[in-house]
Length: 80
Image (tube, rainbow, N blue to C red; front, side):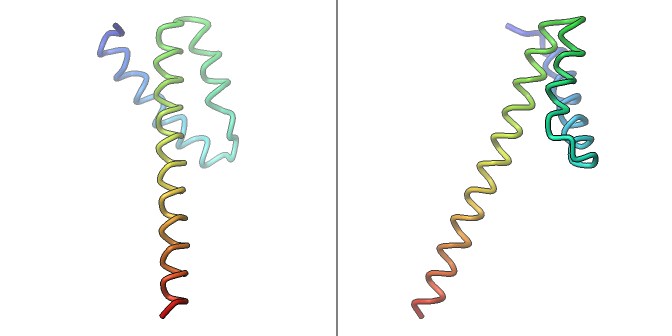
């Protein structure tokens, strides 16, 4: 079990990393960050990568739902 402090640090780093990625357009920045973290702490690296992946998956899921709803609404409007 990972210490809650490590999880908190990983979550904060993940949020900051994703913000920098969005601003710079460097979509693989999180991989480089993982390498930096892994050089000092494999535990923090793993927690960070988990935090990044879950956030990225969440964003993909939300985009999927939004697109699905958009298509449904367009089809429903076309049937009226």
